[in-house]
Every structure is written in structure tokens, then in C-alpha cells.
Length: 246
Image (tube, rainbow, N blue to C red; front, side, top):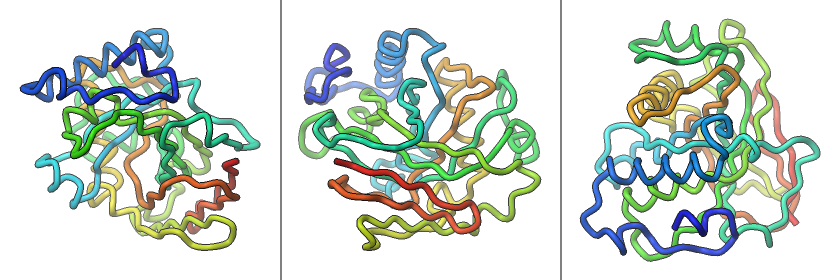
């Protein structure tokens, strides 16, 4: 599986080889994949929450978002242009992003602590590439495949104390002028700050070390299968992100 990770080809689900695999085993596989293909811990550009909504957590029987590591080289720079042929199954997700001001070395216990760790908040678009194959994939399959982390866009805008209620933000995704989805910030674990805190704590538990400058994506507010076209992701007072898929 790990050898296949750098290509747009698919690879079999981990559970097909290890039917009784546990979540700790899945995270161990993930971390091995990340360290090998990201060029060590310095190749990590941030972290993502997966399956952050209540329906998704209920589906997988979890009480907090799953964790994936974002590749530093996966952060796109403007102009944002992607080629559909470069991916196996590209997905578009509107999210909120948080850039860390400090290294995270110990558990984060409350909202005040997590706010103090943030340098800036801004709109984000995650662009996962679902390469793991098979029907009815388990949480072990998704985690061992790093929750399909591939590319992302993040535009830091405001300081935490300058942000209005980020939980009130609504996102809307348009493709070629047609709305393909809408969603509110509370879809991510019910509260953006709680989602951020949970992701950071899980990262520490799994042996990662979130660092200053890392970007944390808290979970999808809107999700759509990628098709060719011009996209605009709106985020209320946080502005918008435009990109193209060809």
C-alpha cells in the first residue's frame, strides 16, 4: 500500500490484508506512510480532521474526528489549477483552516488554550485523492490510507481575536456558476474550536508534533466529487477561493 501512495493508481484496503487490524495499527501504518513519503516530519504541512460531522462519526462509531497528516508539498499556490488526470478520485471539500503560531507539545485542554495556539484563520479547500480501493471501506482502511490527504488550499486572513463567531460561517461551493453544495461551520464536530483541539490532541497521541506554521483543517463543510470546471468556494466574511479543474 505504501509503495502505491505516490501514484494516481489505487491500492487495496489495509483490512483486506489484515482483517483484524485495530485503529492503533492503522495509525501506525499511516505514520509510517507519512514519514516515508513526506521525507520525514519536516515534510508535514499540517493535519486534517476526517469524518468530523455527526453522521460520519455515527457511521464509524467514533466520538471525535479521525486524523490525517497533510503534505507540505501538497499546499497549492495561486493560481490554483488542478488536472483531473493526475488523481484517481479527486474530491473537493470546503473547510476552515487554522495556522499554528506555536509548536504544540502538550495536550490542549480548553478553548482558551487552543485559541492561544492559533496565528491566523482563513478559508480552505481540501482536495483529497481517494486511492484506496474496495467496497464498504472501514475506518481502519481510511486511517491507514491517511484519509486520502493529497492537496489543499489555505488563505490565512484574520487573527483569532479579530474573527467573528467562526461557528456562524456558512460555506457555498459553486462550479461554473452552479451551486453544488452548502454547509455551516458547525458541521465540523459541532464547534470549530472543539474540532481543532481534538485534532491537535489526537496528533500528539499518535506521535506527531504539530509545529508553528502548520495548517489544521477541521473537516468538510461542503463535499463534492471533482469534475472539470471553474470553482468558487464562498465563506461569508472570510471571502472566497477560486480554482479550476481541467
